[in-house]
Amino acid sequence: MRALENPSAIGAATARAASLPAPTGGWNTRDPLARMGEKYATVLDNWIPRESDVELRKGQANWMTGFSANLTRFLKYNGIASAARKLFVVAGTSIYDASAAGTVGAAVATISDPSDWMSINFSTTGGVFMLAANGHESFQYYDGTTWYTITGVSAPYAVTGIATSSLFYPIAHKRRVWFEERPCEPPVVERYPPAVGVRASLSAAESEPGEREREIRGHVRDHSEQLTHRVAPRASSARRPRRGASKRRLRRIRW
Image (cartoon, rainbow, N blue to C red; front, side, top):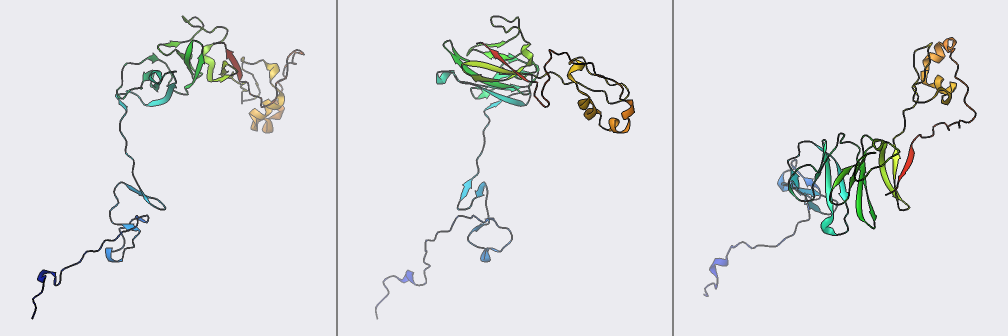
């Protein structure tokens, strides 16, 4: 009788390699493990199932901390050199430089309204400049080093002939910077008859009976006999505005 060459091999378990598909079916806490399909997972931490694979959930890291108010706008300055490019943020009544990670520093500019700021980069032979406006206060001008609040009497830069606080939405067109001017207030018609008045911001000649009737709606229908006010005739030299036409105007700023 011959002895076994490897007695320990009797009854020894054998291992087989196997591959499982990605758990695209997601996390399964309903079925028992013995009856669970291959497309499910019992543990699925920080993985997002897709149609053909699973994606690792992306994390986050703080870029800058220490703001005393919520951020409402990012203003990007595209300098010629990469080192001159900057990122500014609007938070509360201040503008901060957020180009480098860390704790927020001192404000680079002071504003009064943090909403609706829009900016544009504009380049000339003198360099690259950024203009930011929101239509509620005088617009801001950044020359790559210093921030300036532009008014009619500001120095060294000023814009005259228009209220700079009414300008917003700057755009570049044909080598010029254009702003949209905040529209004037429309005529307000009193809703209580018999008096029908037009606010002094526009002359009575620029309102029409049909517009007044549309504004007071139910009063015209129920009290039409009380509409005795007549609008003064329009001067022949005044141009009649188109209905629905916007009263916004574009202003060109030579820079």
